[in-house]
Structures are given as C-alpha cells and as structure tokens.
Length: 245
Ligand SMILES: [Zn+2]
Image (tube, rainbow, N blue to C red; front, side, top):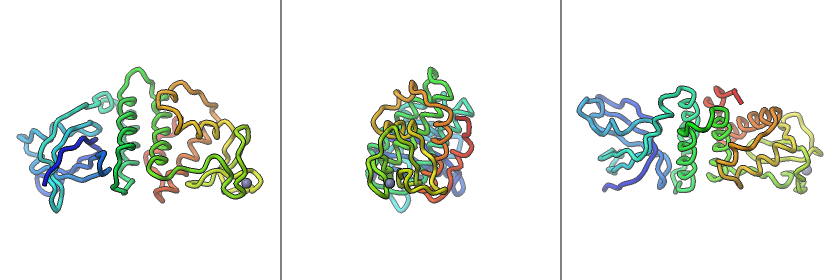
C-alpha cells in the first residue's frame, strides 16, 4: 500500500549501509519515519529534494517500515538553511515536533508549522521578532495538541483572574492567584497574563507588532521553559540555547 502526502522534512540521518532515515511531519499522522533506500549514492535524485526544513510532496510505501517512493519540493525555505541563527530557531521547532509522540490527525498543528516556517523564512522580519514568534509557536502548538493551560480562573479556588492582576504559574497546569503563595510557583505579572491569553486568539503576524516589557519577556521565557518541561518531562535543549529575548 502506498499514499501521497505533504510533509515537512524535520531530520535525516544515515541508516544501515547506504540508506537514509527521514523524520517527517505530516498532517495525517504527525511525525513519521521513512527510509530512503540507497540515498547516499550520488545517483539518488530523491535525496536532493529532501533538505531539512523544506516542505515536500511525497509518496510513502507502507510496510514493516515506511519507505520513500517519491518526493518533490513544494517550498524549500532556503533562507532558513543559509543562516545559522535561523537554523537554531527552526531546530527548536523540530525538537518540539519530534517530542510529540501522538500520531493522530495533526491538520491544525500542520497549519501552524507551515505558518512559522513561512515567517522564519521571511527576510522582512528581524531575528528578535522571529525569536518571539518561535515561542508563540510553542504555546500555540502545545495548546492545540491538548496541553492548554488554564489562564482564566485560579486552579485552586476557581476565582476569576482579573487581567489587571498578577498571579503565579504552575507549570503545565495554569494560573494560581496570589492567595496561595508558594515559592515553587513562577511569578506571572499582569502584562504577561494578558499576553498569554492573547496567544491563542491572535495570528502570528500580530506578535511582530506587539511590544512587551523586558521584565515580562524574562518571565515569559522562564514559564515557557517550565511549560515545555512539564509537558515532555525534560528540558528543551533548543529553548536553553536561545537566551536572547
Ligand atoms: Zn486562588
């Protein structure tokens, strides 16, 4: 049995003698693994279409192990691959996608991936803005994938959290009001709470224009790392090496 699909090429590694193993993100099943036989031979044309971070149309042969039976580039996002800093941002996206082991329908997530790669590839957006967009992606993606934190009511007393109010954040779960103060909860100021609530409401483009204070950026970075850690039970390597914003 075989089928055609669109996919993003996440990673490729050498496999057995001359084969390559591709990790691909598809709208139907999320991450799939597919072998390209004899990819390392200079005559392999398919391998030339399968560059990291590119969007491809592929034919997959289903078997004990999926194999790649055809590939064509839809968009190669070449600007990302020619800039080391952008590659590190794209690698953060890839790391997140590879961690998500659920293989159900990922159409909504796929649209988000498409969007973030478009923006990373766009030379009219500066690096600082792209860094914010990648972190926005993390929040959008985890929410769609089923890990949306509670941001409206206190997790403990269910009190409605006013947007002018600071609170605390329990990683992976959501907000807690200041009445249950504990040092292990992370601070979340009023500006950050408004910002976090807006993430699922607004399109990516809006975040190119939004300005938040340095203090809020710093708190956001901390709770983003904690969020990731709570979901996947391990720290994000990619988020750790991105301390700029
Ligand atoms: Zn409370």
